[in-house]
Length: 222
Image 1 (cartoon, rainbow, N blue to C red):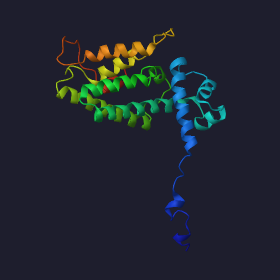
Image 2 (image 1 turned 120 degrees about the vertical axis):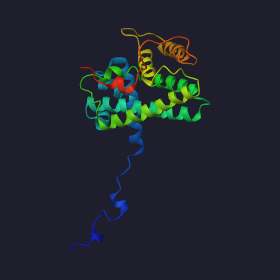
Image 3 (image 1 turned 180 degrees about the vertical axis):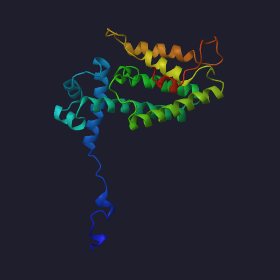
Image 4 (image 1 turned 90 degrees about the vertical axis):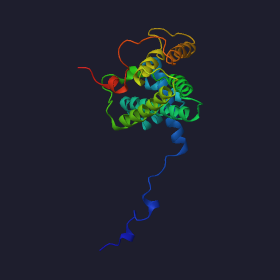
């Protein structure tokens, strides 16, 4: 019988998955950041050549990381969700109160172009991919905790849900269709702050309908 000592995987170092090189990690992040901006400008059908040009790499490097358009779109969405989640976690931990955390999170999410990426989630996009489901759940939990903390402290009106926040964020951070809209970011943050001020407690009006939840927004209509 062959001794287990002869097996190359008995030593932990021999079985360890090699870590990607630092330059490969940097290239991947540059690609995702560039692709996010290109998709915002041109939509999910944007040319790969432009993504590679903005990332400062060759087409071969781009295809080595992301062999097809579906893979790139998937990872751009995941990249943005992870960054937005990290911002939410940091805001909740570092800001003096939950409303300040909510403001910091919302403006940072707008800077990540989260609303402008919504058109990418159409037909053919696998919303049920395990990576995306997990990332979505983590983002949901931290944003719900932020809103709940603000409501419990009397800082945020109680007749709104996280879904209301995400709908407004998606709409207000999306570029106007058919226009270059110079200095759009300045207007985005101005209008987002107007919306956020409307979330302060005490409420100054009665809202029609019921609070929007993220589960409700994800539910597919027949």
